[in-house]
Amino acid sequence: MSNKTLYQIGLIGAILATVSWVVFVYAQMSTPATSGMDDSQQFFLTIQEARTQFLLYGWSGVFGILFGLPYLFTFYKAIVGKEPMIQLSLYFVLIGSVLAVFGFFKPLTLVYEYVPMAMAVDAKMLPFLKTAVTASSEVMELPWNLGSLLLFGLGTGLFALHAWRANVGPKWVNASGIIGGLAGIIWLQAYIPFLVPVATILIALNILAITVWAIGLSISLVRHAPKSYPGRMETERPLSPSI
Image (cartoon, rainbow, N blue to C red; front, side):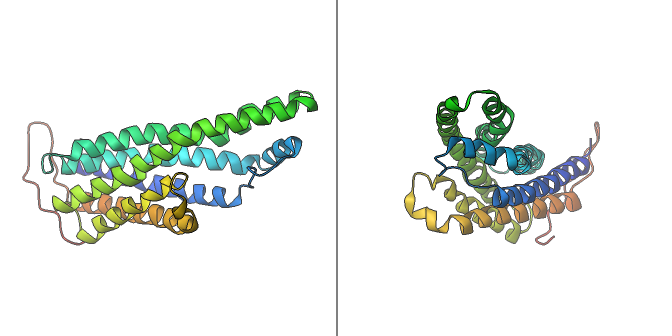
């Protein structure tokens, strides 16, 4: 497989990840809030009525992460050997992906497991079932937040910084990735209260800046990749400072 083909796969992954995150944002905005509901019956009915939104919310997050892995691996291939600490960024990304995917199972578990249980049990059992839902949701919050910080904050930010230092891709594209990584601190909002008022802005900045970086750097790599085949190597052209 030539480098260009590999980078094209990364570009396709970046585009699919972007589509997934657009769906995720839509689902997040349209999913009704249930955290403040005291009526357990209304709680489960609300989830059942908004089943589609909850499913989109969960699956778009899962696929957004999975589709992001191909372009991150191609970035790693382009940078490795030029930056000695790039392996650390890869570890952050991989660990963060596993933890964040685990967190996105929260809305899926509600739809696939708890709502059918609520429909089947006696109404007197609903408060206890709601307590179980609350407890399981709290268990998922920590890995979700930590995974998002590692993946969309530290991992992405360091990847973009390494690409900047190694002159892989346009500076402005990597600057966007660095900004997106810094905005990833928002995933600590549950533990840093002063971030809550600016949560919407930072989440939007985190997603938008990383999207620009992922697609921009992928396009740059595709355009400037050498063609290499088994038994034959060509000298890699330096990446242009602009896409």
